[in-house]
Amino acid sequence: MKTFPADFTWGTATASYQIEGAWNEGGKGPSIWDAFTQTPGKIAEGHTGDVTCDHYHQMEQDVALMAAMGLKAYRFSIAWSRILPTGRGEVNKEGIAFYSRLLDELAKHNIVPWVTLYHWDLPLALQLELDGWLNPDMAEHFANYARVCFENFGDRVNHWITFNEPWVIAIMGHSNGVMAPGRTSNAEPYLVAHQLLRSHGRAVDIYRRDFQPAQGGQIGITNNCDWREPKTDSPENKAAAQRALEFFLGWFADPIYLGDYPAVMRERLGDRLPEFSDEDRRLLAGSSDFFGLNHYSTLYAEEMSADQMGKQNPYGNGGISEDQDVELSYDDTWKTSSMGWSMVPWGCQKLLHWIDERYDHPPIVITENGCALEDELVDGGVRDPVRAEFIQTYLSACHDAITAGIDLKGYFVWTLLDNFEWACGFTKRFGLHYTDFATGKRYPKDSAAAYAKIIADNGVE
Figure 1 (spheres, rainbow, N blue to C red):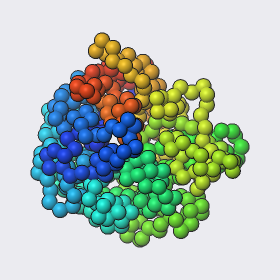
Figure 2: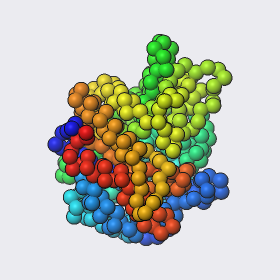
Figure 3: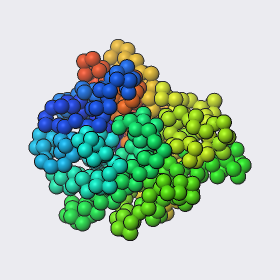
Figure 4: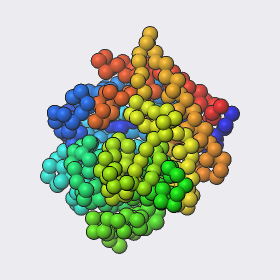
């Protein structure tokens, strides 16, 4: 048995738009995802998050599922437009009441909340009126929204995450257009990323000055990154792998931990990469109490050949390939999920070491890790041994990293329930519980029991 530290955090994660439904109930305003999903051709099979798992009405039942698994923590996001229907102005009391009930329900079961302030569902009014994350004024609006959340929920929340995966907001939302707001550009992603980082810095500053002294919580940001393994040992391919990681994770982590964007980005992007003001740098420096990491997969990286320029699959998480000159590929022997993502536990371990070394040994929390499979409900259950093995093997790699001195504090499986998987609609299932979207009923999968055993044992075989 590989036993984890006694205070290790075991959890699952969800996101508001993916599970809540009730898109126009309880005083909630529309988000960019409400608009995007109702635009023909944007989402697989025309699916929307209008109802999805109906968590808004089945919240108590979902917390009971968590309690049955013995979860120690639950990471969820707040829908900005449920709190501030137009993104600013008057607070919606019904929205405050919903998340207050959720927090109280979690407390009843001794489940610790980890709250994400922004998981991609920008209030639509801010997109239409201000051009969304392209507008420098968004830092002020986000900080004001964050303050409302700290004021109303901070007495019960000790773990805050400002943004989930800003890379996705920038690249998938503003480069290849796969995600809301569905824009395509090779300049906008870098402008958007800049405003996201500025917004993070402002929100953290407010929390640390006005709330942290009394509430005693932690605040950070969650970035996503897949491992990039050099395809060969050639200097060119080693450099390509390093460059890919810096364009992926360094883009958002370097300004917080090292003071500016990676030098390779400055060199390659020129004036497409904005400059931080002295005030921005001050607010960003050390602005994460933990290193939040969403990790799913691994790919080989090599120097890109001319004929491969611009041909990357957007779901391969390559970024703007012509800016990096990195070609990504799979090993045919790797198992893959139904997303086409490779299952490579050693890649997770290598990435943890890379983060530890580059950013001077920060405390790390894996805020998402999981896999989508072709699950089928048979006799009220789902046999998903591949998912159970995925969790087991990735956690084994995590334990090896801890043994080697990495300060890994927690692990959250993505996700509690099958849900609305963004542009893939309901065609991809990541959940530990099967959701029948026709009836709203949930069924624990075998992987839920497997994860519950890991939690009970505080370790993996």
